[in-house]
Length: 366
Image (cartoon, rainbow, N blue to C red; front, side, top):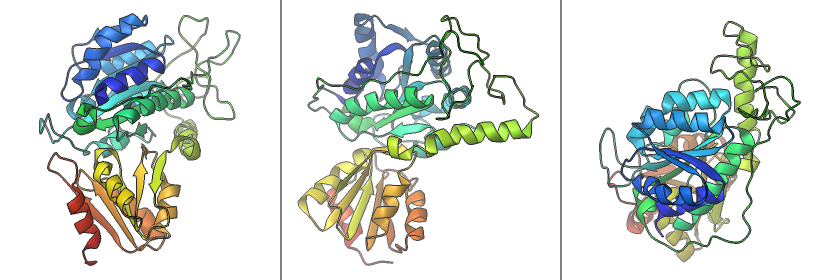
């Protein structure tokens, strides 16, 4: 099946019951398949008037206990940013399928890009930590969509399943498997006190679902653990923002996913998504070239990057943008003493070719 179709099936197998969408190339096939599939499993599909309505609808649905999702591309994702920040502040589990295309503006609606990576991280205002998982195959569109739901529910945080026009529209085999782990949020007991934000040791408050007997005040303003707003209290703000970030950053080992090919190689390529297609072929054909494929870009797998950077002579970042993750990799590699850190940037709308990646690896250090 198609990558977008596989993402749809992954969402449903993860327990999706509510989808609000608005058609936009190259993500539209997700909404089209949801129209048929969700009613078959007792779920609800709504086509909204725009992307602002989509993100607001899935936030509201999540607070009624539904696992909820929307799908979009770069321009629609831009419209969602304020509400994504609201979801982070209110600790609302939602999933967004972001199918990237070339930009800025209308750009290349039918071509691939990875230029929205930093928008995922910094698109909304304030300090927060979204989750972003990046498939590079149709099979991973299925499995990583399930993982996105599981992590979103576990940590009460917005999660993004990030593909692009190439991955979303390619076709390939999908093994649905018999054993699928599905994680659901911890719900606040009916006898629970405190409301929506009372903080346990794992920093993730139990979820008070609307209509289940809970009393909760949900606010995007600075609030204390009982939900009382306190926008003028600097200490409350500092503790809240630190916890929202720490609940993700302190669990990198649980969240971050990578694939490593030829771990002992002295020349390494780092890539993700469709930019990793040719890079993996190169590593499979040449034991002297390694590959670190990022399945998670946010939070960035810093530990794995630094481990590789500390043992290699050359590190090549391959991206379909101007180097959005490269700057992070360069920073980490320099801390490990790896001076030869390069970028192969492809902005054409097509995944990078093997010949160009090899040329970037073989050229003399400038």
